[in-house]
Image 1 (cartoon, rainbow, N blue to C red):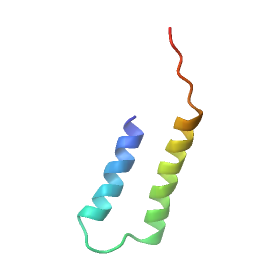
Image 2 (image 1 turned 90 degrees about the horizontal axis):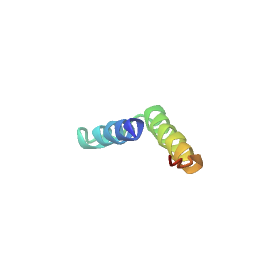
Image 3 (image 1 turned 135 degrees about the vertical axis):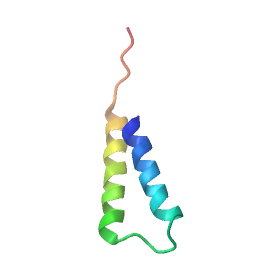
Image 4 (image 1 turned 30 degrees about the vertical axis):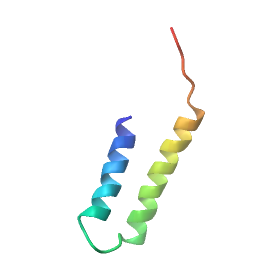
Length: 49
């Protein structure tokens, strides 16, 4: 959960605190982090006690 929150906040800060586009490498790394998180969520299983 905290990884997801961190990704969203980092990406939001890039776009709200500047008027320029982020560097391509930074943008790609941000998307990669969100993609990895989405993959982990997709394969996660809920285990109930």
